[in-house]
Image 1 (spheres, rainbow, N blue to C red):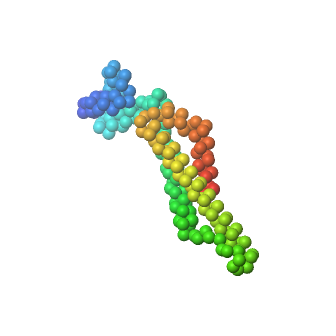
Image 2 (spheres, rainbow, N blue to C red):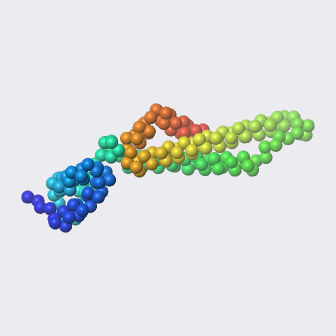
Image 3 (tube, rainbow, N blue to C red):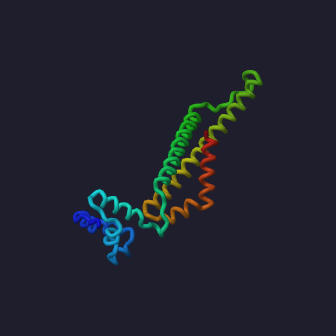
Length: 187
């Protein structure tokens, strides 16, 4: 029979109710948390007790019973943030090009008529492309950052069900796709 170390028992008995009270208040009021943990995880040392407490607390469902793999979500948020940063750099370069380029069209009476026509078209195409870059980059940056902000707030508050409902909503999926398409157009 494996016995529980007395120091580990006291640490689990003191710390676990504090941690679990914010996650699962009904289990604390009935007094079943620490004995249940100790019966499930008999340990010999401090490291084993800490690992047992950590795995038990992580197993407690939050946000209505749905658990979310936070490492995968973190990767997705990192990728969204990277897209937003690249889009903001593209928008900055587009604004800079728009600011430094003279968009005046030469007088048609000066110079050959063919050069004047090409210059007009080049200026118009440049202005349209830069404006498209700025608008699509701005759409990408705002959409991805606001979506990431909402999702992080829900997860930070332990509202896993609300996060999943938000993230899987058809409108939000379409909005993410449109932000990615806007990013491709900006490039």
